[in-house]
Length: 385
Image 1 (cartoon, rainbow, N blue to C red):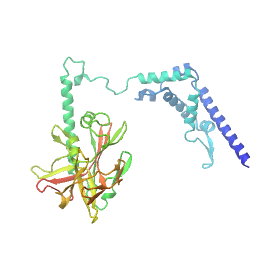
Image 2: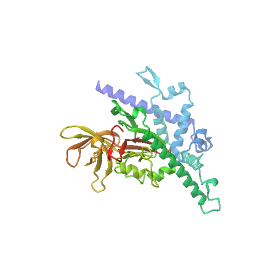
Image 3: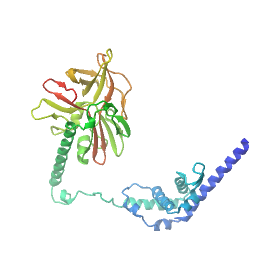
Image 4: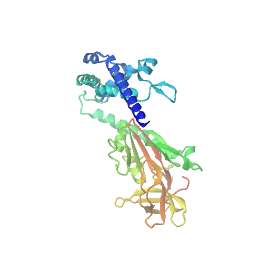
């Protein structure tokens, strides 16, 4: 019985191999099978409107292969690519079958044909990108004008100033005006949101999506992933489209979001008021002896030891203690991997909510702020702020 099963399995494998080889040869012979066919193949609207300029010959070939497959009738697709499914009790085209046939066809192609597809890809990559500025426009003070660049400089400065003013108004507004579901409540610890591809707990943090001009974002956070950011402690995830940032202390977030002495996240609640509105990394602290919990905010980080200086909330709001920073992962909030104890060992951090920032390449930024109100008269952080 075992020998018979082995023979049947071998026959099935051979039949499947021959079928796929036949499919590859069928498509290869049905469409472009000479260099002249590839050269005379008309460009589609999708190829001409595509803004990508790093396509290879294989990419262009795949596009043509799948286009030919989509033009087949349903009966033809099932006849040439379909396999019998015991689940659906009928013939279906399994996921990945067409892609595997296309890959096999490319591998079996001779070098001359591959070069033809590469030339086609090179021509598509050579074209100008629709909607892309190649030079600075004349109206903004481009190089066509006979000046020393003063007009261009003035236009950039004015644009940055206007955009920064808009960002300051938006950030201050979101810190002052809490939405109903962002206040304190029984279910505040159950609030979650998506940051960096993971669903994390945000408790009563303030979540906002702020428009950030591309040039202004470079000024504030730096080029690339952010030359003004610390890659070891502040940048958790970096891709071409988004950068995931964690900021711990109030001092650090004020350094980042301050331009020419104007801070977007530290200001008086009202004119001549003793209350200051700001934000910082938020921690939940328990006593190692009495297990009583309290809330604290990371005010600054010691440059030498790296310890956090945390100020307590409420009646203990004038207390400032040093803690060892907790070890945590950027995509899992609140889960600590070592004991973050105070210097005297009487308190321990059990939960941590950093200031989260998602820097999108398109020009927007998503913030998760932990707001607090500091009373300049009592030198305390107010309750239920």
